[in-house]
Image (cartoon, rainbow over all chains, first blue to last red; front, side):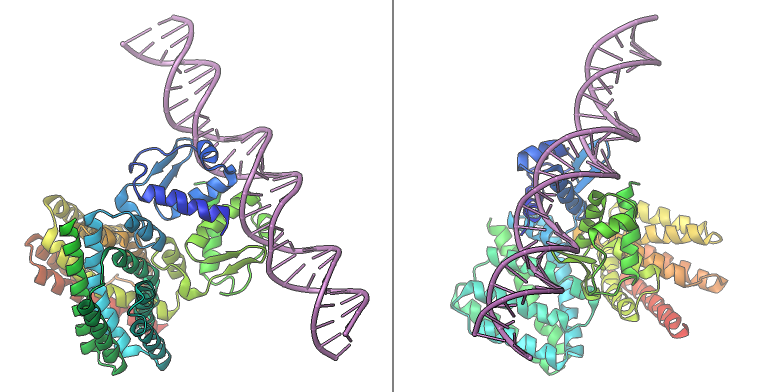
Length: 230
Length: 230
DNA sequence: TTTACGCCTATTGTAGTACAATCTTAACGT
DNA sequence: ACGTTAAGATTGTACTACAATAGGCGTAAA
């Protein structure tokens, strides 16, 4: 990883996690050079990347400003991960869950209609990896993420596929906040995933959509509980 | 507009429109400096932006490569506009229409549930502007785009709002390809928009969703015809 | 012939300086 | 109090230099 990449992540996180209030001015390029101990060249490239992600607004002769939060590109996997890492605001969480609730069932449906043999192999492989890692939560979660990503790919819709990284980031953030330690919960999760995979393999769109609706609904319910508890 | 912005658009368009085959190597930074008559500094910033948009893959010591098309960030308004400007591939068009058909009806529904008085004023203003510009197609289209954007904003879902620029780019591209010159067509369009606005104003989600389904369906139909005709 | 080694070149990453262009601010004079 | 002017601050662009390493080429050994 290059110094530029590193600083992009560091500075991006600082902004996304509220180090600087939206709308306010950031330090000048010269100050940032000192602060991060690097050349102006690197700082400018970092700024260009963060501006493309809509976190920063660079105005010539005036300075750098934090974009208003509602302009941030939440569909960018980096931005989403940075924001979610440090407990995001409830509005964003609700918006994300709402959108996910809209598109995931349709993704499952499309996957059931279009999955090729190759797609099915990928989905099944990740299901099996989940199954055999019930006692290793980190591995289990990563397999779960790959399972859903494999389904996404099976839609063969390039626009939907763009969302893959963002959805993965969302899943990771949810995993970090919800504990599926208890046995009954794990069994239920595996059963749901089994049902979904089965529906896709049998090329049954209705069953796939229904299976997904249950999962999404329960995830949303968990998120609501977490929010209420905190 | 700065030189960097200008070259980002120029080079980005070249790549997005197939000047260089996906997967192949691009000219080196030094060559690009000569080709675009600029400093390496500017070229590197251009590259950073296009890499963030997933059009370019910069590999240290190896060179610059065009990303595979299915990695391009089609949810970025620039990328989408560049790609669509020069007749995109049918797969992409189909994917876009499919996704739009999924989310637009729900957007209409949410807008009907949540639109504030301010939102309604914005929507109505743009409807009226469409109405009074039936004979000025460019103005009519821009008003149409703002009409749909106002509805998007009325969902009060920040994730959905991120899609606004991309959807506007998509609409512009569709307008450029479809001719609504004939009178009957225009009347139908206005009627559909009136129905949608009316449903949102009356806070009737079902009616809003239904009105939108008709519009989306007809747009998809038009796109299919255009594709068949070419 | 094949393989291993080392040298050379090409290429991106980082640092630093210099100047241009213009917006902001403060000082100044009336 | 107000308009003018000048200085300073800040981003945009250009150029040079060096670092670090992947890849290609040639050479020599097995």
